[in-house]
Length: 436
Image 1 (tube, rainbow, N blue to C red):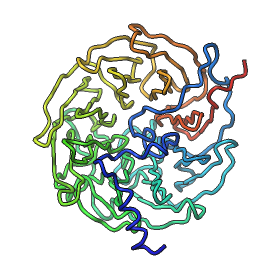
Image 2: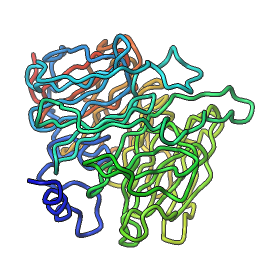
Image 3: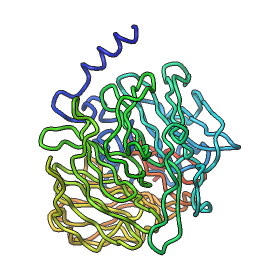
């Protein structure tokens, strides 16, 4: 098929109902940051059989290089991005065995060119790759701004690449108040939308830039020009029938339109400036509302209602998440920072508090009303979360799975859990298979 023919086919796949979520047929895959629906809620069941959950040891462990990038699962393949010996490494593994199918690599520094602070807490790429089901192309973004497109049908052959620092000159993130300066480079996962790839570039000419996903050529830029935040990814949402994306930038929430004729126009902004430039948790979206949160000076969570006329605060509560993007499900908000917590979606008030989970953590809600949590430098645990529960109820726990920070969010897909730590140990656990 020629390029024009492929473009025509891709247009037919663009959402007809102003939705950016992938079709239900791909629901068992985890091709994006935070899963198929990009919200931490999956159609997979937890594997809990009433007595047992998963094996105490993983099916396999593979060293994939340093980084905070989360794994993706597509069919029987796992994709991940890491750093080793002066190079970023893209790895495709066989899900059942952990054996490599192909790898690709390129020269890259361990930190971005403007990096400052906390080098002992992170290293390598932080941005999760993006897989496009329509073309089978994989997109990766390094800490130093190297944006690559790889052909997964052709053993990871490079399709195109460009460097965002070179092309857009994003400045070093500014010092906030009396806090020390922090800059972790590029951290936000790209997002495919129709025939475009959206990236939080954060340059002085546009916060979000859209590229032709087949060629890498720029298509449009947002009118907003905030510096990029440190969050895990852009988030799709629909505002009064209009497709949009949200980002938590350096200085607050940004919502822009992505529909033809209005792409890049600002819909809403809301100021949210955090010490150390650490707006890390991504926005969480449910219906017409967006949830933003950060720790440090803010130590708060804010629910905003978004219309085409802007953002209106619904509530703000003194409960925060530092790195874990909250999961919204069945009238509750779940987050893993400091302690595992459940909040009421309508009021933001705490319903229950669970165990200590540390700074790094993530959680996924499964189809059988369970919460899988990855936290505490190497603990996987399972909790019951049905609406009747007024208290935390833990069902199972597997401990001592890592000795480093667990910044990468976990992936639950194809009846398995994929979890990774900062130094690059990627593990697989089969759901519903136990050694007891």
